[in-house]
View 1 (cartoon, rainbow, N blue to C red):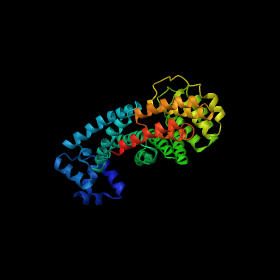
View 2: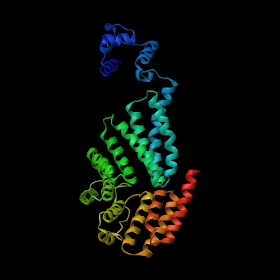
View 3: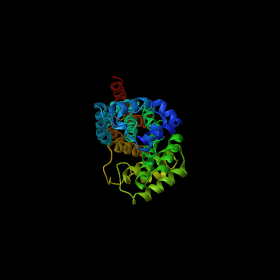
View 4: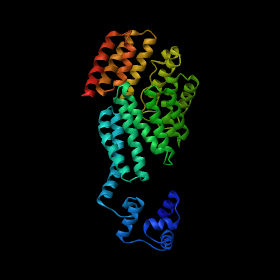
Length: 356
């Protein structure tokens, strides 16, 4: 209680006399409480202090049924966020959205009620990121700003908590959602910040594929090459993940080479697909197929591109990935009319289902 009183006075620029007036105590008694020479032990007095200072009662040790429920939320919340991420990476992004949307709303209501402890804020930041990323999988391009909105809301929290790992994570995922909306310069800026804040090699490695992709989309050849070089070197230094692995980096390299005007290099590498060394998210396999088909089209391999895109469309429908269907539609519009028609039909059906 003494520490809380001192912090409250500092935050509100009060002296002990002014705090005493607020609490109904004289200055001497406030001083005794701050130094620990006196203790408040009766529940009524503690509740009055909480009411006057606007503190949740559990902060000063009074447990109510609401506080018990709050602790349960914290205990189960970590599992909720983790399971939603597993669902998304398993190709069930719609289920992840359905799980996270009400959970985020519940956490935000907790914060509004005064439960703003560090653990809850960490959980809310991760849940907002998870919701945004899952939405980024299931929304069409014209609605991807909604996904970026939710990842941006996580940054509101990281500004107030001193945790480089959480800040790097939030910036990393927000930067990737900005790239999807076409804000490539802003995406690169956020991802560079995420790399700079990464507290260890694993956290930095997680940024590299997304930063390379954003740099390629921006047309920044020098940055793309530098990041890919670091990624290649880092592969031998950290354990592979579902995002940072040779298979995913191969797709990032192909797309970046095409985007930076080096299609001939991409064509030479197109068939040299590494065998996945770890579990790869199903949506990454769809992304890789579409990128490979793009390279094949660049090399005038119409048959190979058509076969690859047909498989990608089927899988994108199963996983409900409208953004990837839109990539295929743009790619096939002029040179593969049959694929374009099939893709557009699947995309229109998916949008009708979303609207319903």
